[in-house]
Length: 78
Image (cartoon, rainbow, N blue to C red; front, side, top):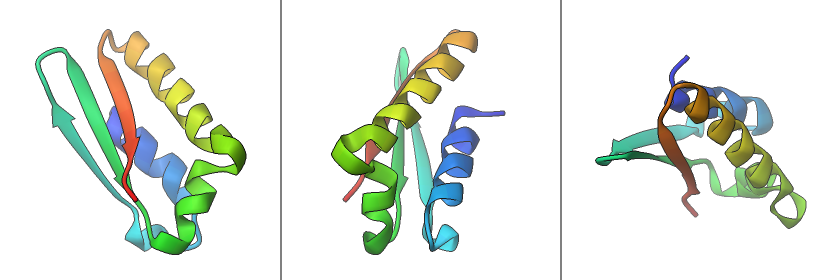
């Protein structure tokens, strides 16, 4: 599973409007930046209380990217 698909799968499972989930991957020289956009009313569900859900998503992404010998960074667009 690609990193972009992984984040999209997780985000769609969390939100009320899964059809409004957009994930873009920008590959730089050594790092992939994954940009996640969700509906405005679902932003709190993706970020979570005190950012715990977003932190968990970043941890999963870091583990998956390490296994693929890549570096990845998750950004959540508001």
